[in-house]
Image (cartoon, rainbow, N blue to C red):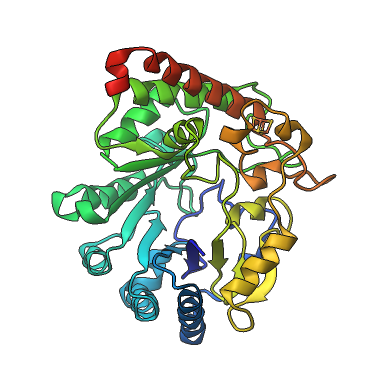
Length: 368
Ligand code: SF4
């Protein structure tokens, strides 16, 4: 087990139109408890304790997620952190939030537990408010930017994890890059909007729209090397070009060992699978009845990582790995396909490879 994602609150204070939890074909959130009951949390802690003892585990990343995890409140978040730390003192915590409810009291708690916070924001005001809105339609940028502003204070550098931006190719890539870098995040995740061969992502009719957008941002980042900002998808592609592991599931193939626990204690696969079919991420197993080993064994058989024939003969397969599993889905044949972003990924990987190779022929750059 590498990463356990805990859904500590199943509702959200925003109503983003691209949300894979509430706007997808999978509507399981409707039947979930709003928060994780104390008895469920106790079982989660027991499963962690059982697993780390069985494997003499030294590391485990525990991600607090939702919905919007900060809706669990200060006491609710503290209870989760305390419970997990009691079970496994070496657990490393992170959280993905929309940042709206961030305050000094939460940040003090995060310092106490060494929790690093990632905030979702899609660039500047116009880019962010295009999708990230309240239920009434009002944009959320000002509140999000205020939350990030707190994280940017020097005293909170230790808990500022980074930013997560969902790409909309209608947003200018230069403006998005500049807006994100202005927040001085240690790391940026650029997410391709979820979609598949049956339910295509937006703007699929524009050839290479995502590849061109990402190439533009890559060139800005690679040429300017803005401190302190790392961009995970680009660094992962470079790492894979050198045969090193990827740090994101978007490229490099699937790495096993990530499980989600929903508020009702169900074990699930990646949330992105909510965009495939109703029940897409479900495993049918839960903390009440099965151990973490049992769910990992189950997934190794029920959802194995297999490349499509086109990927197996692809010149960049070792870098790409077929893309994200959810993006390979088609109703006709399941996941036996290349990514719906295949041409974009191929263009991006070839571009990054060419830029890095060109640098490696210059002795000064080799040193750099
Ligand atoms: S670029 Fe396309 S064919 Fe090649 S590995 Fe990626 S998804 Fe498969």
